[in-house]
Length: 229
Image (tube, rainbow, N blue to C red; front, side):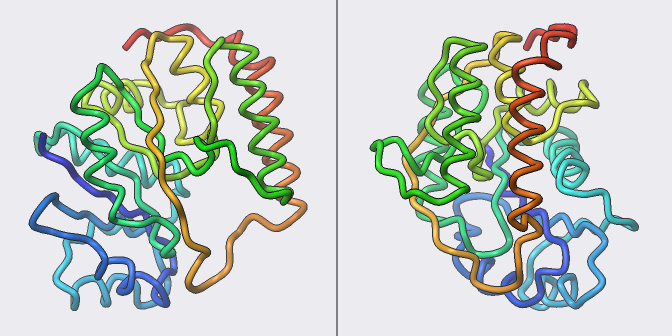
């Protein structure tokens, strides 16, 4: 399968080169989607020899991911992996996730940190647990790590995302995808802490995010027309 590793990046000059150095360009193609960065992210990617698709304005994560998906569809890729620019995701799990996708009927494969049941007691993990419970209640499927940003999508999933403008790379869309007939599987991964920069999710924003996801899964998704894969 032709795989595109897509890295959405916004002002990640402190970590992007370190992240790119972990990838094996002989096994898959790599595309950095620069989301209107104001620092030297683009220049550093070019110096490292990686292809960059630069957006003229900041679209946010959802916009950058969809641009990457459209690029992958247009260039004939069979799968795309969303890979963080901040150094949290590990390249060693890319090919195992591709194997899970290619040897199953899955549309989406989530790189899961919690398949072994081990969790710490942070607010982030607590929020993830609540969101996973909401997905299980509304879809009947148990997802261990709904908030993982390391996700691989098949060509059918990319096409589905691009045809549905309100679909985002967030847990509520995972729940909606399952209800629309999408097959979601998980593959075990571990992740590192962010190597540089600062997450936009402060404590207050984390609470808001968790509340928004839970309300969306329990309430809003029932008003969305099912779009089959």
